Image (cartoon, rainbow, N blue to C red):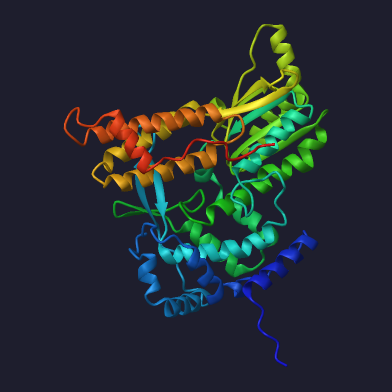
Length: 439
């Protein structure tokens, strides 16, 4: 009886199991997994409405002859004749600011190939990455990092917080250091060569090509994984294996991509971490942003001492929330609570106003549908424990803005609050509510 060919999924699972059993094993044969089956799965996950790169090819264009396109792509990949195209750079408005934010858009096949390589690399590195790394990983997210922080600060002897920020992280990753880190686990030369090609593909802006000597591929789906890999070796392992062992008290480092917070029992450990962190990152071409990095007293004991002095504890920001010291409802227990960062709140409202301004000619039912979707998205992220007041305020301000713009579409004074209430009865907006319990 003939044995059926193993699926890509099964092969990736076996690679993951081997990576978990043998943490020092170097994989020298992985590229054969870049086949039509793997790339078809990656293609199906691509967004239908994604903006095209410099190739001008959309998902619908590629799908018109999908089987042949994938066959030809696989041939070019295995002949090593596939060359990533430069990333198309555009600029989009930055909410709450007059500045514009650069956005990189890879060509469609580059998105496909990167997505396939991510599937392969994840099978290996998901076994290596530490538990307190939460960013851009399967089954993990921002709320998991926030939950870990809450549990640590409220249930362990945490008295000091180090809030840290790396200046321009994704633009300043050393490509040479990154490739050295890749080689620790990935000995397959074809995988290495394609990662390097993506790193060197460059950027096309206003018709001109610019080389990319530093940083990870702009807008590429492989960038978050490479960023995690870089910080795994430069920060996570250094903290776990070297720094934590030298601490006089307890400590924990919680990281989401390049955003991280250190929790410490003793002041000496926290201050020394701030100093040694700067030196450690500097060895790998990274720089701490001093204006966004601070060591502050925080926790139950720090709160008692601050109250005795008639003072309030400082706050710190992490993943879109300002964290502040408070008490439980009965006042008997220390609580760390959180609220939407003020600047983030303002920027989100401004972005909604700009969207309404640009789309005010849409049919009213469509405006209401999209507004409801935007509110649901806001609640899904910001609707966390203790943030009721801020999401209610966001809902209120959004509704007021909606009424204002709808009333401008008719004759002055013809649209009043009563008519707007009838519209809301017909097209109700979702009510603000807590969606995520951080306990």
